[in-house]
Image (cartoon, rainbow, N blue to C red; front, side, top):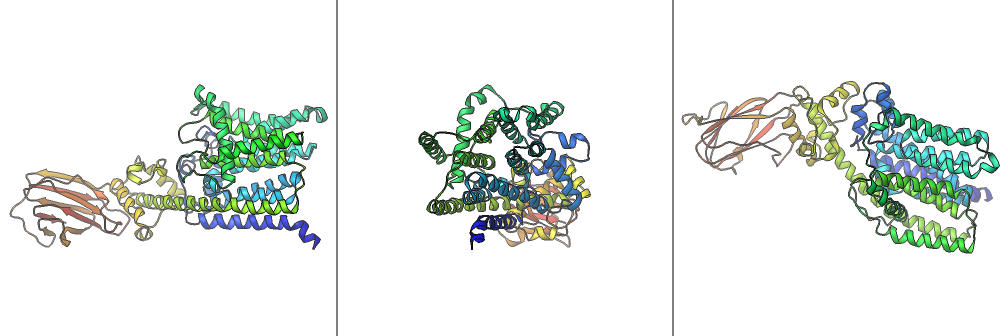
Length: 553
């Protein structure tokens, strides 16, 4: 019985890790590549140094690119699940490392609560559900490992800390915050351990400096005097958004800007409580300063690079911010012995805080599923039209129905498909896809094939009659015969004198006509050209005309 009590938190940590892995797998099972992931898939071809060292949005991404290329070579590009599993691994390792870090300071039960809060932080749903964000989770994993190794206070621990810090900065610029933490640790222990261990922070910093001088300096920067002057407010809002998210009180909508409305008063209250507690119990753990410096550095660097869309309350920034809040709290409470009653209350509060986070995680997953439907549908259209599509065609929002595919250029996409396979729907799967996907697939197809019309004025043949290949449509657009099935090739639409007529088409869509042409005036003949492609599904033409029309296929 005593063994069970002593090891119960560790066993429950294993349960939490398993539950997190299962939840992420269920929510991500239908997802495919999203937004910036395409930059790695399409823009990082080959194995030159530039492929790995070129910055992405001014950030170092050496290890994320390496992981993407490894997964492409092993599993291809037909599914996003391999990168999801790799991402989940970094999340689980980070949760376990946080448990070990907090356990050394507060004991196993508070450590379990901290790990659960991080593992199920649904307010940070992009980090939990979008594999591209391993630039955050990988950096956190390396940074937490570094902090644990520094706890050893020996040479072997320092060597491992240096290596893990290189891993952290290799994942992303978030590693800079942990480099600052390492410098602070070296400074604080200079009296007992000397300056010889400064290499722990210097080696990773030199690695980053070499990258910056060689590649990073060419990237766009958003550092301005305004951002620097506003950084204190940004840092405060950053910590506030993290506190509010941990408490389950984030009011930031999915994929929308927001403010830490609940987080600000919570943070002010927590700061006041910490001051009161330290007034009653003076003294701050030396371990507080490295993690506090790391948290401030993280939000300050984000403040310096602020542009609209990078607000402190953005969901993708919350994960690392929440981690630093938990680390700071563990250091401020270090050595406190919690009663059984306090632990029960803490456990109940943890459950209450996790519940709304799970709801936000669910909402984020549903939004990503909608994006995946559009991604698989729009890329299916490119696959179908691969024989004729212009390589320079880009899936911009007005074509694709989403802004998440602006990186996808048809030529580079098809080159990647030739090498690694396609993540898109097959024509049969597209025909059964949700309506929004079929709608935008028709729009993309019309541009990718492309469909084209050529109108000749005064070309209506009054003596023409319906026949084997021609259908006469009576005036008006409400008759059932106004929709005609078309095959690839040329179709002529002759209009009797009258007002402007409209021509609309659909293919995979039903009960709507997503493709709208320029139409044609009365007394004209319009030739509609439909190139042949890789799908067998027919097109359907809908003529909206108040005069007689003759359609010859």
